[in-house]
Amino acid sequence: QVQLVESGGGLVQPGGSLRLSCAASGSVFSINTMAWYRQAPGKSRDLVAIITLDGRTNYVDSVKGRFTISRDNAENTVTLQMNSLKPEDAAVYYCNAAVIRGVTRYDYWGQGTQVTVSS
Image (cartoon, rainbow, N blue to C red; front, side, top):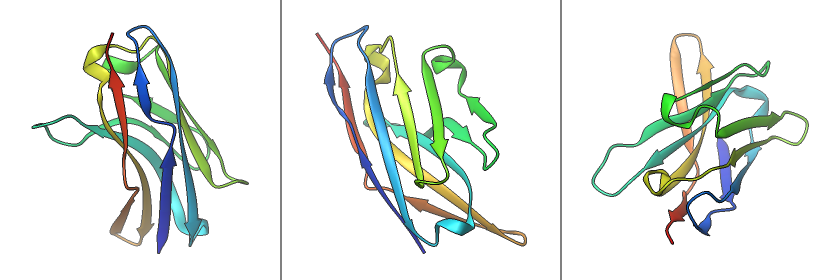
């Protein structure tokens, strides 16, 4: 089992920045990828950014150049630095840890943190 606790959400004006953090505990040695997803009201939960164990990253097109995902394997944390925020970035952001055993993937989720972008 993996437990995830997020922090860092809040209210920010358009063009501003926020930094989200996620701390993992439990069977952290088994984690493969870590990622951030977001879900706006009435919409699906979508991938925002993902980072592999060896630091490779990928982003949804809408956040490329504005968001940066990073991972500290020693501290078992993953961070999402969000710059130049837009109103359409507003959502509940969820930290995700994926554990792959053989052909089975297990997903673990944090409780979510609200990001509001408004003037």
